[in-house]
Amino acid sequence: MLKNLIKYELRSTARIFLFSYLAMVAITVAGIVIRAIANTAGRNPVEHTVLSFAVLALVIAVIVVCVITLIVIILRFGRNLLGDEGYLLFTLPTTTDKLILSKLISGIIWCVAGCAVTVLCILLIGTVTGTNLDSLMNTLAAATGAGMNVGGYIAWFIAMAVISLASLILGLYCSMALGQHITKNRVTGSCIAFIIICIATQIITYSVLALMHITQRAEYGAKQVEAVMNAGSESAQLKVWVDFANGVFNSYSIAVTVMSAALGIACYAITRYLLKRKLNLA
Image (cartoon, rainbow, N blue to C red; front, side, top):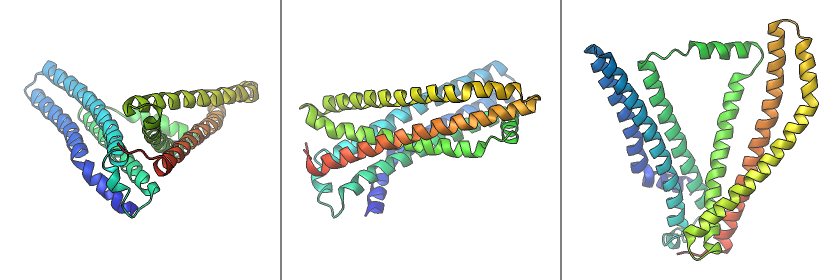
């Protein structure tokens, strides 16, 4: 049933998102084509102006797509599960968990798709303008040669981004579920709930990270300086710094990921309880 719910959700929102992604690609291709025409005509100032406008239009399009994605995620949850459509959805032979997960998974899918299209457009512009990535690749190769697990960092960063995204979406769901119990106006109540969740999250996050920073500095600060002084050659010093960066990155990234996952689980549990026990359809 979860698969069918996700499929239905994706089909219901596909027209909006696909049109937005097509617009982003069209803006990029149009800028590239016009730039090529100007380049053929030998008008370099026109070429640079067109490319600048294309980049600006792409940035605006990315911002608009992000806003549209956020609005659609909010409206689909609010109207389907907390509005009149909830009378139909909650009579389906499925569970509350599957209803929430279908909204969550479809939202993550569209966010990832938007990021993929954005990266594609950036690569197209970079390829046409002849952007040289050799320096970046050389830096990554040097870091890899010194012992830094670049591939692992990239994979871990993607995992952190997905978990943080899921936590954000669940925070929005939790805010909307709580909003109907805070004030008579659901929008106002949802905004109040979201602000409270954000403030509480920031306080907890910064407190944990500050404590970790003090501990890391006290434990590794003097040892790190001494190790660098005794390393000798530049390659040995780079190896020491890479080892230190690996340790710091692992500890901080694990802490952030765990806190994001804990926030997501808490918001999910609250949303699930309110939809199962305290549901108040508009």
